[in-house]
Image (tube, rainbow, N blue to C red; front, top):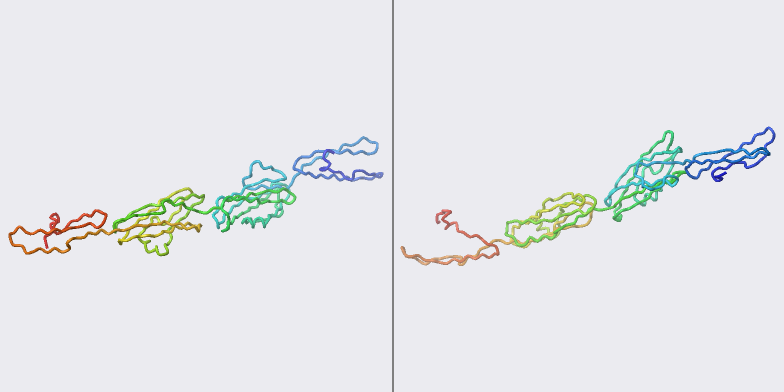
Length: 342
């Protein structure tokens, strides 16, 4: 025989009594899924040897999954490797995927997954075992749901977990669970705003740019200011107050400073990012100056003047006590206003 380990015949020798019969057992034990053809020779006494041909095809439990298979992976007793990609998952959140397992062989399929491996990886598979899933001639399928639950202490970055599906009396199929654990973030450009010195009751606008550098949408909002600097927060208005940045996108946030007193102002505007404990702030400062004039002298008293005389002249000095130009006029003496003297 060309395949003594695959094809075996029992008994190998013996004596058959007159008018008796002998039953031979031919065992076919294929190691791989292929067609095997062989023959053995039976010698009976002085008669010419008889050549007996045998043949068979090795089969084993087989499944197919409705997932992408990794190209180049062998198909056979080693099974195939499939990919279940969860994509980007934010720390503390979960993502679910579903696929079907179909028995494409002739034997019922049974498997049970490694629960400890799944638990350590934060993966839940339902069902985690299958018993006697029928195959041909009426093959059946079962829907499998896989949930990846990210934990608060998970490290950021890509992760691959190979989950073996060991078929009873069959090959091991592998599902490669892929996930990228991430967290929303923003980059702030020009987050320190110095409005300088502005005139009281006027306003000045400056801008901060927010940029989302991550792979997931970033939901942000203006938080409530706390601490001693919170008293100046009402003088700095932010627009918009919230938004959602798509991956890689940017937006401009307008901050308007409107002082009502002549003094210095300072505050820190908190920016909150959903699912991210990091603290972001826009630091704002500014100075308000009230326009002011001083007169010298403050009171003007003229000495007695005779009627029909040339009159008397007194000099009034008006000084601008600020660094801003001030337009000065007197309504009482402005002929364009045509306001009579009082």
